[in-house]
Amino acid sequence: MMYFARWKVILILAVLVLGCIFALPNLLPARIDDRIPGFLPHLRISLGLDLQGGSHLLLQASTASAPSCARRISAIPASGSTAIR
Image (cartoon, rainbow, N blue to C red; front, side, top):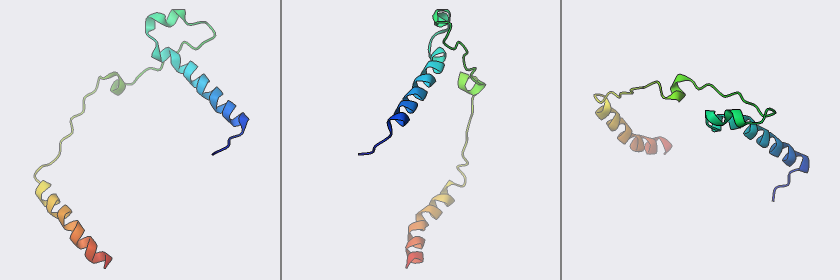
């Protein structure tokens, strides 16, 4: 079993608790923001356009080159076994 020094465990737990406390305003609805005690942080992370759902990406693949790629991929095991020998 792995052994960690007690101070390391306490330090890791303290960092985790502080991280959760600072992330708390982002997880709570805005109407509860005024009920948060004054000693806790009130700042929220402003999300970018992509995280707000305001952007849309359309990705396309060229299907014209798909048959030639399929032939090359199917030839890989035969050429690989001869290269190993």
